Length: 470
Image 1 (tube, helix red, strand yellow):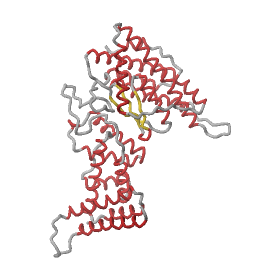
Image 2: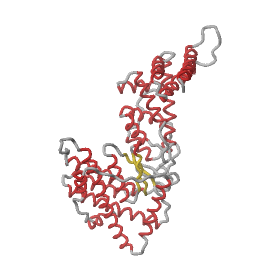
Image 3: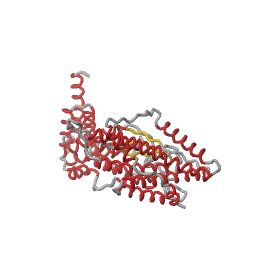
């Protein structure tokens, strides 16, 4: 667009805004009868100004943006105009957050991506925007996993009035009016440009209470979700998960690498056995359970190696992991008990690997330059590769034992069918999936990471069998 065209466009836009200001100020006394209320005129002026500011922000027209923000700060109509601007922005948040839910986003996803792209301050503002939008839904129509996310983020309406919320938020954040408006515009544009995601659970307003007496919302699960139409409703046994958490907590707290590895292996075997028991139970009942999906955050630094670690943990637990690098998370697809196991184990192994990596210290090359980053990236990548091999071996060992105990040839076809279901669900959700290999450039880091994953024996089968829930 040429400079003259831009100038004409800006002139027309300013004329519309000025007409709104003039109307908001009210008619000259005695000239004509004003049919619309002052509140309506202020709302119209606020709408025009906010829309103009958003368009200027999108067009990266800093000069025009500064003018519109200045006009919003001045607010036609004085205090009433300021409240009208606030109400207008509340309406914008309600629309863009509601659209995000319909496009597959969940509360923790929104918080994660805002924090990743815009920082903690706007992430806190996003939490308030979520609170604004969620007020309209009856509790019975909000999925239980959704409610768990809201609780984890401490989503609450802490302000008294919507038309003073942004003022109160500015006081809390130490931001003046212009800064609050710029923050608000930035967040609105970020939220309004989020891509569509796979729908993993019913959005708020669409969930229905389970009428079977379990007290769960439609589509049970922990913190992730499931594809539309999925009927998976069997989470892992809470007693088993408590045992696994206890084992992993011990693994994270011990100062002995051998003990940590042995405890982790025991946890993996326990989860693998539980997965097999659940698969056989579902097959015996003719259950129509299908794979679900769950998003797991993958944060910097060393996000490539962390994504690789999640991938091998998911694989060992009969799941598939797909990393969305630009969004800061991976989607793990599998049956609910396996998703619980994969998420628990990944979280613990990441703590253990990071502890071992930090214990290894920093590194320099012969010229005295730091090579700590390449060392640690290679360390974590090697740890992931080797621990994946050992976890898979533990899973296969438990599977062989369970097949021998069953003795009727049922198990292997059941597991194969579930593996096929997970693969098909993943391909349906991610039709353009691309595989990548993880590279390492530091030989010492690779060797150290492998050693950290290779220290302990995995021969804990007898202990695990004894610990199986009856």
